[in-house]
Length: 370
Image (tube, rainbow, N blue to C red; front, top):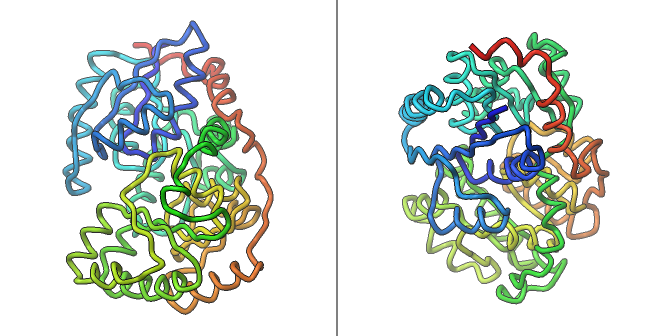
């Protein structure tokens, strides 16, 4: 069986890494790793590939940044040529970036079966580009691998046949549990001169938060209060940094003495920071999951989440972007009132094993060979 594994952005790497490792244990699988280049930085991507033990991509499309339509179209054109040349038996796509959807559409039209890892996640907010990507990818996939039972129900409501849906757990957690001990050896806390459980950690990158000056200004006003209480580490996304300059907010941020700005970090350094934080503020989906496993209180600066299990069972609270609410929720956590949570079912480090087993035994993958 020839499997074409697709990644397009850094968050995809943490999801594909355990699958690549598990597939390598099966002699009956030939795998090819394709990177669309949707999100690619030589320095950062090299760190992630090295730290996660990923081989260099066999195919690199080099699509780069562009508008949603242009980027999607460029991936589809390039990926079609790859599929026609390699004729894989299965295309595996992960997550919800533009590359995920583009490759799913292309493969489906060529009658190549598609497996979607992290299927069924829904924010029910179609203003999010990722939500559109999820819905379309799931509608076209032959195998849908879910991280939680609510994702199964979402898919069934949308008319997906139950035989296609497989509750396997969370590959992001496979990666975290594999590398947590190595991450503990990072010297990132010493480099930033912070102590365990004596700092907060922040990530902020979603267009809805950083592209609107009023929203970004409001979030920063909340950070100003929090950083006065304890150090706040902020690895800053390129999009966020650009907008701080464009909206004349950079000087204000630089003047906050407790705000520790860093460049984007490698996986192990960031995992170490999460593991030892007293509080994490984020608009990232993956961070909500990782903090749940680490038992660290997480405040999500969005109006919704496609990962409700992190709220119902984990340490996550969805609090929106109101400065007053951000400050109040943060101070509550610092006062010892953060959520403890529990580990969701099958978030045990064995999701990749379950996925590969399903792939190898799925009877409805036959019949596509022509």
